[in-house]
Length: 64
Image 1 (cartoon, one colour):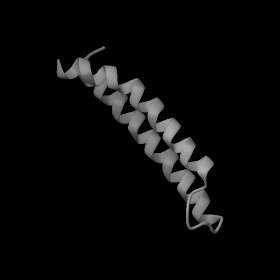
Image 2 (cartoon, rainbow, N blue to C red):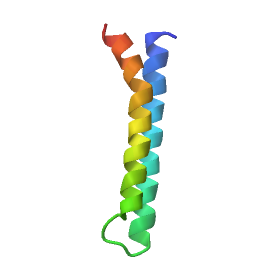
Image 3 (cartoon, rainbow, N blue to C red):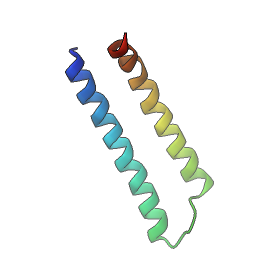
């Protein structure tokens, strides 16, 4: 995979992650909550970790 394609893939993954986090926060806020629940925070941490673990090897390839 070319460096440009890897950057596009990483950008898309981060964009989708940001969108998902925004949806979680928006739903919580729209439900009248001032804070995220523990399960929402855990879900955000889990999906962030998943995305980071998928793009980290690609980023290392680009910087070496």
